[in-house]
Structures are given as structure tokens and as C-alpha cells.
Image 1 (cartoon, rainbow, N blue to C red):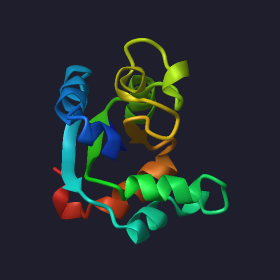
Image 2 (cartoon, rainbow, N blue to C red; image 1 turned 90 degrees about the horizontal axis):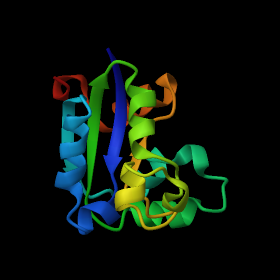
Image 3 (cartoon, rainbow, N blue to C red; image 1 turned 180 degrees about the vertical axis):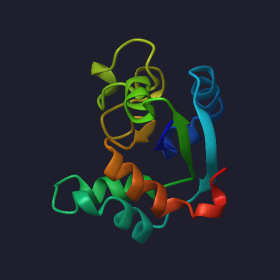
Image 4 (cartoon, rainbow, N blue to C red; image 1 turned 90 degrees about the vertical axis):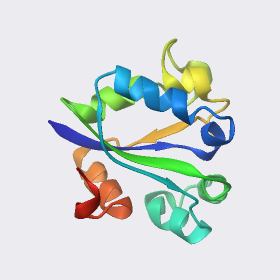
Length: 137
């Protein structure tokens, strides 16, 4: 079993899609081993996305991620990282495959409903940023 990190972003939460996304996560065979509803501050969003701090979209991204509540999750499954990224779909919802979360719930490249770790190293950082060991089942 592998663990990965996932977010239901503020756009999907505000649209009332969090329950549908969570239902899809369970239907696809993930075990949710950690889950929190958060309202990230700008500073917390900047810390989480620090790897992108030199990119031109950093300010817009961190403004968006601190614009409303989100749901952060620790997911477990065989090949969880790839499996979650496949379920999310392409970053740009317009390019995402039918049946993916971003195609169904995302509206544009910036407000694309979900986030997920892209490698074991980032999953470890992401999980540690939002969860302590006692919070993961």
C-alpha cells in the first residue's frame, strides 16, 4: 500500500462538490486514512506551495487556495500516487479525460477542483505539512 496526499480545493468545496468527490474516492478503492476541513491562511498556502514561489502564478495560486475552505486528505491504495493523479485528470479541465474529477468538477486551469502529490517525496512533504502521525489511521 502507498499513501498520497489530496485536496478538494476551495472552488469544488464552494460549489458543493466535496461529497461527490469523496464518494468517487471511495468508489475507486481508496482508503481515507486522514481527512480535515481547513481554511488555509495566505501564509499557510504560501508555505505549502513554496516550491512554486518563483513561478508567475504563485500569488494567484496562494490567493485562490486561501479564498475559502478546502478538504485535505491522506489516501491509501496500491500505487496511490498514480491512481489519484489518474482519477484527477489533466491540470487543465478542458484537456482532462472524460470521467476524471477535473473534467467533471473543474472550471479552468487555476480552479480545477483537486490537487494531488506527484511523487513519493512530495507526498511525504504534503502529508507531513497537514497531518501529524496521530491523525493518520
